[in-house]
Length: 181
Ligand code: ITT
Image 1 (cartoon, rainbow, N blue to C red):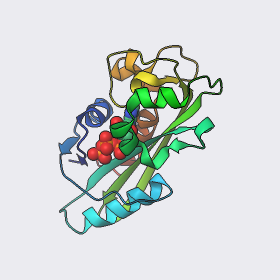
Image 2 (image 1 turned 180 degrees about the vertical axis):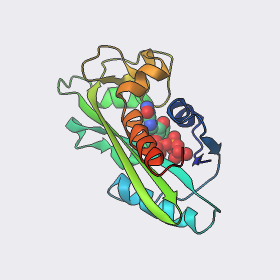
Image 3 (image 1 turned 90 degrees about the vertical axis):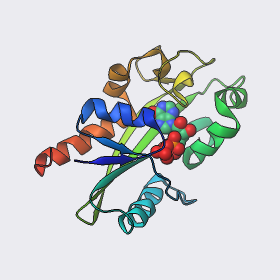
């Protein structure tokens, strides 16, 4: 039985669609200021690994907007809280190059060892916020080959192409290979 440690219930619900036996543990852990999501995950896995019994999973994600030199990137949570989607749309007002990449790194602590599973989704920032599903930056992100935002898709549809969907399927394959699910 694996547990995802997060405050974000939406992340959990996306993952549970792919790994139904997953449980959620709402618990605080330190997210260090670092240049990459991978470093944030490694630090948090070690920190939590010293404090928690058994195996667990964490997820750290970010939105990288190419025209803004990959901002907000590792600052995505803070920027979402402070500027929000409207703030991002303002920063891109009049900008034609709207390419962006969502990235998820899932960290797994298994028998005292750290593993990472990475998923990327390329797309564009929309001109306006659209849709009522999902969370966070979903209303302003249009994945490649689609015209709808993530917030205009069901969880199943988002999972098919999303950064998190890809990372979870890698985790799922690993857990199956070692006979844990
Ligand atoms: P944790 O407790 O798991 O850390 P969080 O919501 O703080 O939850 P992150 O730091 O991974 O999660 O996320 C950074 C920001 O990016 C945050 O504002 C999220 O809402 C947003 N985000 C993450 N994944 C997303 C997704 O799939 N779609 C839209 N926004 C997302």
